[in-house]
Image (cartoon, rainbow, N blue to C red; front, side):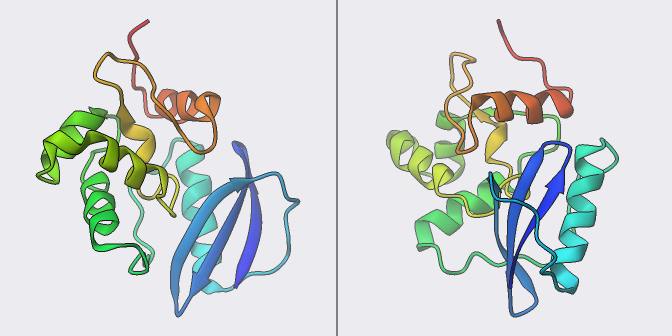
Length: 152
């Protein structure tokens, strides 16, 4: 089941399969009425996050279709606390592949669950934003929402 839900931060496509959320990405598509129970719970919790009322998510997710390496990176991303950032290099250390920061950044960029798997909390070692699939303005917005101050 796929649905597009509207939030203060824009529209997001949310997809569920077998009772778990498998995809969340920002989209320019218009909101739809399509939904199921897990999509509704996901939308409710995302809305609370965007309103600054939620720091963690507890609906079922599934990203088993990623490669084992991608899943390891996504698991490591989920360990970054709300309101904190780490560098791509630190993320690489956490998945025991410090010399392969580029591979970690690529897996980070393929994250299928925006916000829930918080790839927006990974920045460059220099303090620069790095990249983000929904654009740097959205990354900056999410970091500001979490009261993360970036170096100028």
